[in-house]
Length: 94
Image (cartoon, rainbow, N blue to C red; front, side, top):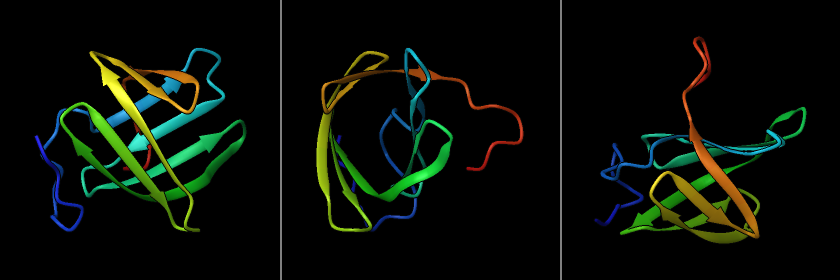
């Protein structure tokens, strides 16, 4: 699957919340092809856009930093970290 970063709605199955085992890093992949990365107590440490092609994700944060990762089932491997899919908490920002 490809995902046009200019489309209104993501066309991949990875929208949602991805979290490291210790809960310190949290990626919220939004359906509008934007993401919010939380680090520790900083709920919006990084923000930007993303694009998914197949099982590969590319990130471009709003400061110009780029990164990527790969999905394997319900696991996201990104920057030496392992994140798993988590349910969104009621009332969480989307």
